Length: 339
Image 1: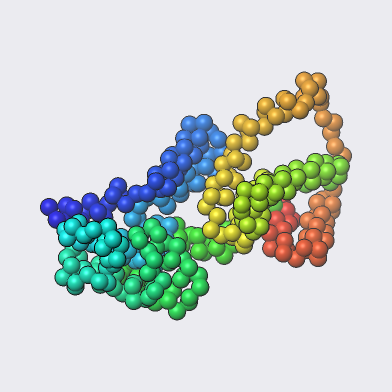
Image 2: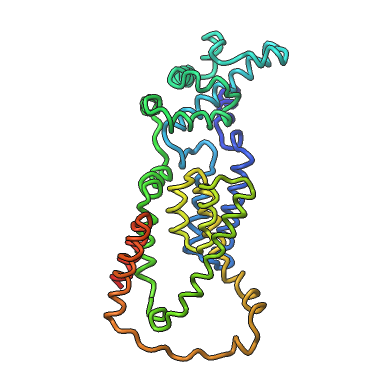
């Protein structure tokens, strides 16, 4: 019976949180829209499947080895403390004063000595950083504060995780190598540049004003996000979604608000995938039937020299004015030049 209880406590059903349940449903919805409704399947299938993978409890696919070790330790600790309180019929006041380190060694080791050793090692590494943690979920914030601000403790946690056979999740590895470093957005932007034909723009430069006007959505979203209480960095990361460009949104978010990367990436790509559903009623509202039936005249042919000079000149001019935009714009112009 004890082994069945331990198996149940280590299952995903026992450890699932409301947030994970919600994100699993979001992942299923994205898969439904991509497969059944054919809304941008190349975008929504990997996003939806990734949302499901990263939110399976206890799998650790989207977590580092050190976080998995800390989460396992804190989960075990909370279970042991709760069992001790129930078995000794402690009052609420007395229960609030109990923590794992105060329990006898026999009680700490009662379910699993190896995990109890892990708890003690994690406690020793984090020291007073966990003194205000009431459960495994609340300890997540304390862990990330240590991870970001204390290199020595962070390294010690990584060693503890390695010694206890924890390993980085595959999605976490993708995140560190591709997203955290900014490599994936740059490569994607190079591909976008290679797919973009600037011929119509060069033939009719006045259409540049249409693209410039579209960016007003960025500024209105920025003001709205600030009004809702987001910081300036978070608001800027959210507002860049208004540019209707996923790689840009991801790249800016990794620089300004990395903790919002998941939410912003899903929001940006989901709304872009739904553009074919959103645009038609807006177009009908803002145009007459006669305007929609108007036939566009053929633009002048654009020479090869113009198409080569344009991305090079664009990169130099914008790069000199805004050096921060050089990595993203450079890859985009490089892709355009390859085209």
